[in-house]
Length: 300
Image 1 (spheres, rainbow, N blue to C red):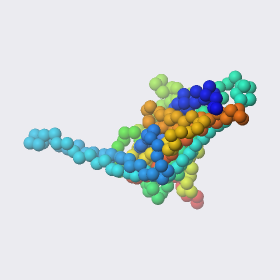
Image 2: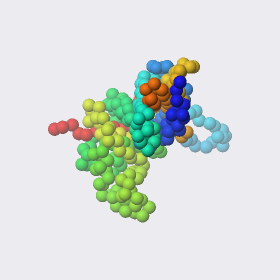
Image 3: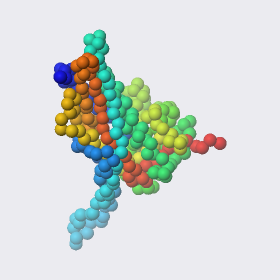
Image 4: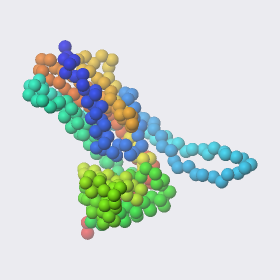
């Protein structure tokens, strides 16, 4: 018989951990997403959609306000990844600590899950999927380069709303030291940037650091784009109607709709609570011209 009292906090704690996950990995809120709390079969295709930019027209009094056809493109995303992170707490550990171990461990496993999902996403950013690139070394990377990236995207008629940029730590460090941006730091309205180290919007881009950005064998140092460049679909695993002594719940982020399945089990014989967070997901390169890779120059 499971010890119900030991597990009643798991969904609430998971909800808080999910919020932490999305805050630590903002790329999951910047790209196009198709999230649901519905279960799915592994390798199942999810049909998502992206909307291409529309064009304004001259008004003609003879015809009036004729609606324009909007181009909504179907995009298939295969749910081909299944990740989880979990922890266990023994009665001895629980009895020996005045700290809420569930809360402490939940944040850690949520971070691990977010890192895994983000790393899988970044593996998609290769030349075969996205041909547009800007070559620049870390020492040269600064606001001027971001202006150049913006100009390239403007010339491809990419909307300037919701632009983002993710770079590795060396490039983010160089950008933080940019003199033009530093002067902006000391303006009263953004004075807290000096303390927090978080950059403001730079030439229309929300810039974020991702220290573990993989080079993907192509010297990838960062990338810039808008949400339609990448699509992520996520669901939760299918489970039987009766799950024995394991309590299974689904926790959903209200803002994004991202859902994580929480499995909570207490082994009365061993005096051990086991909790895991899991989800199934997949990615696809969608509107490919809407992403610009930032790569280091080839070694001479």
